[in-house]
Length: 426
Image (tube, rainbow, N blue to C red):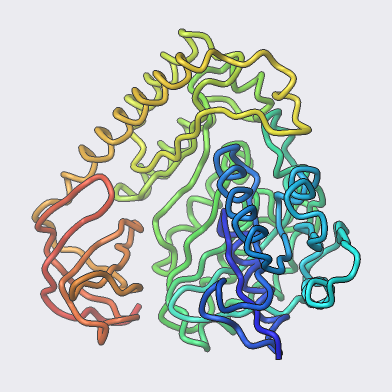
């Protein structure tokens, strides 16, 4: 039988879609590489222009070698550019994951190209729920209207997975040996708006599930943290919740946030961070920042710098603005490239300095970590209760176990430590 290889770009939600594709394509043998595969499925991302160019360059190489390809995911929103490279490839939109088997058959048969672009509710689709990390989608789409976002075009339908289905998926993952559950969605804070429930209630239900596992919550916008209030902060109190909050602000300028149509204020972001840090001092705060938005003045940029210096987030996903097709922001006059590059360089340096400084408070501390990945040269990687990555000298026998360690070195990206003993179960 013909073999398949899946390559994935992008967010955890995209990776979750690839988990579904693998389950749906379970009757096909999976190749170990693209070279060995009869069909290559590219599950794509469209958030950044640089990512799009990287994917399209990769697609060009596959096409040049005559490889049969299926292009899936968010980049199919830019179908014109894909068709310029490979006019015969079937396309599978982000809402049409269930059609992946049909698309693979079309690619193998060399039939006419098809674009599956339905925006249906994907509840009930089979998914791989493996170990030690399992990705569980809780919602699709977004209720925001950000002026720069093309993902909203690629995934326009908003829906929440029913609580019972989310509980079922987590229970299945835990039975299969998952120790980290990554709850994912375009904006997890919007969960439940369409089915008369909310994220805080869902987290409380999931934390009741038996088993020794931790939950990492995916991205949540500030306006939803504000709306959910103390109930969300309290839901993080369970020992089964990683103390990790990914809350994107995008700009430190209230003016730019309004022009981006973000739906929140900078103050909303700062208040949310303060509330969570007050409740959980060692929480890891991650945020997203866009530099060189077309309307960003020198004063607006300075306000973003001041915000980061004031809040000192542990992780900042920095993007230099690139106009995305079909968005309002693409119509705006773009900033000079030299200015955009300079601001990006300065911001990168600041972000690293802040992250390095934040990490130093952990030096010499005794902490616990859940071992989740094999590292290099006799090392393993794990996550602390605050979801900081830790690198430890140990063998793979500790995979999936909790250990106590002493922090011997701390950098912007990782803690490095010496294991003292194995820790108990949650």
